[in-house]
View (cartoon, rainbow, N blue to C red):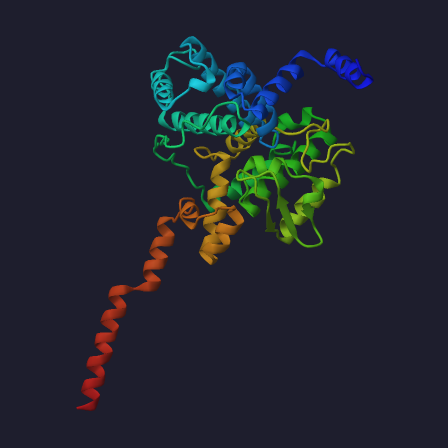
Length: 369
């Protein structure tokens, strides 16, 4: 046995079992023995690979959703004795039907709404496409599968008064003069929370960003010299740069003065330097909304509000700021109040303008006669 063969033998002994399996599967794919490779990959292994490789740049909430949904799918498929390479469109329809009846999922036995079923189907289709690209299955069996449609959820757009009340509520909530409960917290802590949360909520109004995009901002993304902010972790994975005003720049700079000195690269952090989760900040927003007495709308409503305001000046600018690839999507975010409709109708004055023109014509004729 040569020295090279001895080294290869030694390396194979030191190689972990999981890596040996991956190597064997890859070797089988390269050698053309696809049947062997397909038999070796399991639902659990494929899900693990997908979560590790495909979702590393996704939001924590998205990662958790994909993990729960795909583990639920894997458990159902194993219970039906369906191997990953044998998964077909009919299995997809069966699984969605089972989910719709509430037999798979949260444990309460309740039915799953249509929007959740749509998200489940999209998640599975992305996962199966990944498996086909990695060579875990012969081909993508869901290429022609049509994801079930779902009614669009209604998002209430807050009024100017409601947004103003929310922003005012942030410093007021942490002021002992207005809220006696705030006096139980150290001055440094409540000053930090007031400045940070005001900058976050004002930033959502300023940039029409999603809350996940705002919380994932890094210090380097905030460019005060150029008066712009860059969102890198977006829903579409395409970075976008949005202009900012002096007002929001001032709010961020005031917050940065009390931001803890730590190694975190994130712009907005907790008092201990940890990242902020979307779920936790959603709860914080509801506290502010209750304090301000403006309930009935969510953080996403601020995105609708901001885009509606920007679209009054330029709808194409609203599309670019939102990061939408289609103007049709942006139009779904735009809201018009009754006062705005009345003002637009008054300005257009379709009947009055016509009658005025007719009166003018009659007056002109009489003058000529």
